[in-house]
Image (cartoon, rainbow, N blue to C red; front, top):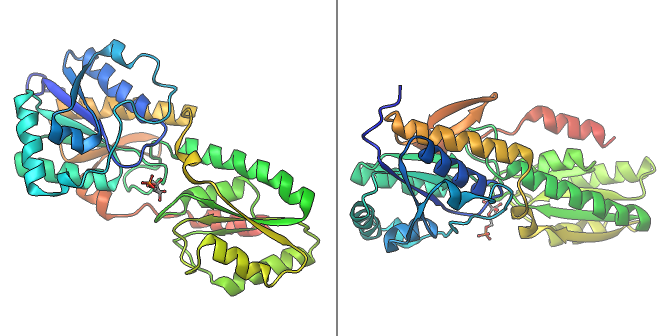
Length: 330
Ligand code: F6P
């Protein structure tokens, strides 16, 4: 049952790294507010906009034609000032002056930490929506932007493969994932990589050399190694490539760092539907008196997880995928 009446003006902001699907989530929050006759205010520039009072009234029509757009119309920032108590107090004063009574925060665990402090210090009801291409948020099988980023990476691997096989080259492709290997592991399988290096599992450089030697002996003339940026070999992707080149005369080794291309682009069906579902769940959650939780999808169902837990715990890598990757590279 929705407890209408207590919540009349919901703020929504995007914070941290942008991710495809954030616009679709903003649209969903705004339209769900319109559906329930609740006012919705867009806060620009993440928590910094909260401090500076950068607010914009949004209605159902203000979010037309954005479901297909990457990035975030509300813009995003990593606010240092919001990390201070004074900064948060300023934000709260503006928030109250504007008549806001609750907040939806779309972002990653840094953003949720800010949201949690805001809730704790001023009693403002907050709900989080997980938005990051890294998929490293506990409490949702998928985060906004992850599926789109993976498809972008897979297309890039397919293209690089054309050159790798035409020139007998060994390519090291670095993908995003500061602390998590979800993008690397899944796109590595989808793109037919020989080896996948992820932060969750450091098998060592010897094993990498051994595996590439086995591939070469089995008749492979080109190979692709996917490297998550946060992997733990102790070498960056260029050093890794140099190290491997010293062991292989037969291969020319090249490096391709995909970088921020992975964060942009039109969201996939999966991300648009996820964003739409989570936006509805966040607003309905606030209207239902919920706070300090993140909405996510677990085994196909919308679930709420305490923000504290979403921040503290980790999404586990599926070890079956490691085994599949291993078998596929035979
Ligand atoms: O957290 C998402 C992410 O894309 C990471 O994979 C990456 O390490 C980081 O953001 C890059 O952040 P920035 O855009 O600030 O350089």
